[in-house]
Length: 133
Image 1 (cartoon, rainbow, N blue to C red):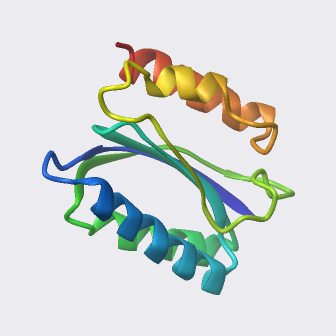
Image 2: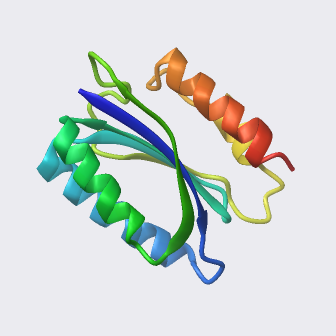
């Protein structure tokens, strides 16, 4: 199984309904493709992990890369894993409410045990350097 983690910058015009649409389509596509993962969003950035059959994950990454609702996508990690890290869910999602004073770094610290330690570590480091308040 392949696990890929990327970071991207959300377009400023995205609102809550656009994020809901992204999640609905992601969950539908991921379920159909046997992909699991997690998406974090802080109003400015997306940090996402995807995992599944290698060709399907690569296809999903290509589809995501072409989505005009974000830009500057950077692949942070792409590695073979033996088991799912997110409890078999097609797309776990968490947001930091805009204007709440929260940060993705804070959200990463509160991740449930669904994410394995290596994923938590990658998310923590990215949040520390890219999402620092």
